[in-house]
Amino acid sequence: MTTQALPITGIILAGGEGRRMGGQDKGWVRYQGQPLIQHVSQRLLPQVSELLINANRNQADYQSLGYPVIADLESGFQGPLMGILTGLKAASQPWVLFAPCDGPFLPEDLAARLYQAALDSQQPIAVASDGERLQPVVVLIRRDCLVQLEAAMQAGERKPDRWYASVGMTSVVFAAEGLRNFNRPEEIPLA
Image (cartoon, rainbow, N blue to C red; front, top):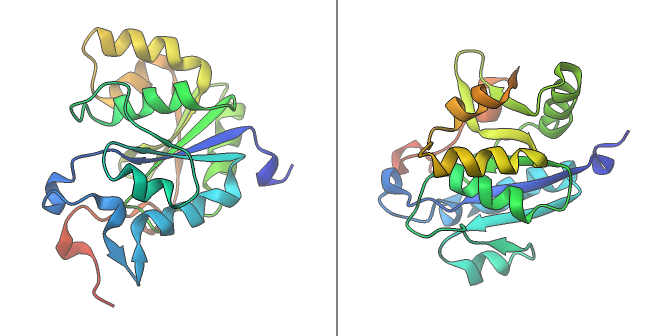
């Protein structure tokens, strides 16, 4: 099975406030001459059947990249689980791969490895790990988990890893460099 044939919608999470980035929209922070969102979309596009961007500001700029743009179902920067819920609702494929807009080094086999791990483990969620910690916004979720996530959020859940554990998950270890992201301006190399 080629990666392109995988039944996966990719969602780039670009809906946060960017507090640690001084309030900047992290997707538009430049690295090696182009915005981070372009690095991430170039990594994900070959791995998924469709690609969407979850963004709560600068939506016209994101739309100019040529992908559908979806805003969080509820306003107020509710955190990554709201972006995940929004993405599960918008996706057309049975599996949904989420990745942050500030991770330009995503592995080229990210979707394939998470998908295989989910199938092998028969778990509805496969989350990336750097070997020491889970990377909760680099995750593949079966779309039919939508109802469970809605219920959890209505009950006040806001921690992705806690929700994953409650539903059933497996983790896949990737090289730490592939999961590295930029949270603060000083982390971005000038070159």
